[in-house]
Length: 247
Ligand SMILES: Nc1ncnc2c1ncn2[C@@H]1O[C@H](COP(=O)(O)O)[C@@H](OP(=O)(O)O)[C@H]1O
Ligand SMILES: [Mg+2]
Picture 1 (cartoon, protein in one colour):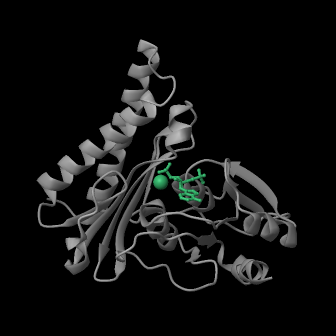
Picture 2 (picture 1 turned 180 degrees about the vertical axis):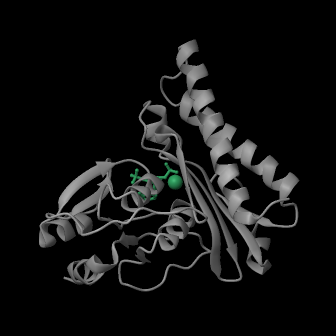
């Protein structure tokens, strides 16, 4: 059956390949306008991931953005936390900044995670090897939402004199920190466990700081999966960023 980390990576990668295929088909057929492609992508990736989990991890519970939330997961020891298509908007606009998130939560901890970045032809995973990041850039490069950067995040950027780097998808932004394209990602104003579980598992494996924006730990598989804020950064930036949030 293979280990969970390899399975997570394979699952995210296969869903990403399917999403690329769905998009190619819609573009070729001229049906990519409006919400049709976004809907087809969300549904196609969800169906694919749910089927593979049911076949290959039948004992485990699942929390997915695109499925009914079965609260039986609260009494279970192993829960897969899934965002079949993070950055749906960017996917449907034929951009490359979107992702597939697959995480495994076991008894309070994230123990496996994979973030497929099909637009870049790569999948980051907790089993991976990560680049040495060196010193943060000067000014610090801060990933922010393309479409809804919060006032708080804009204020943090101003306080530390950061350069804003707008991009779509929470997973893509966390991955940009892991890949060294930016130095930090600060988010507030709303998000759910599936938006950050897999990216945070990967970022932690890469040695990055991950927390809520008040510095407290991120917790997963809670009754209400709303998890509105997130800080992922190179370790030496976390004092300055937490102070800017508090300020
Ligand atoms: N204020 C908010 N409330 C709820 N979800 C939010 C949010 N801001 C961002 N998100 C979610 O986080 C992901 C990344 O958003 P963004 O690209 O703006 O940074 C998106 O996931 P989905 O694409 O899976 O819906 C989006 O829905
Ligand atoms: Mg999402």
